[in-house]
Image (cartoon, rainbow, N blue to C red; front, top):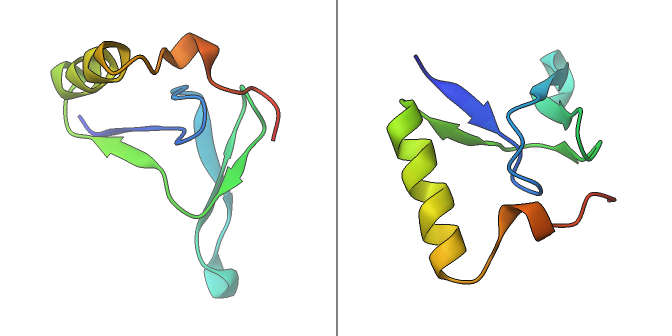
Amino acid sequence: MAFRACPSCLSLSIYPWMGFTTGQRYRCQNCEEISVFVLEFDEEEAFLAFLEAERKEGKDPAAFKSEP
């Protein structure tokens, strides 16, 4: 099952916000960021591996900005 994550805060609470002639846009319920792209993962293991790689690089997702 594919799922999407916010590119700003990595929250999974993201939903389609606008579409049709303006192009698809997504809004995060966590940080309220509006984005034209999202991070999409095919399986949970891929998402967890991505989070682990971010932590190893010192980019703790919990420390990401929560305000736009």
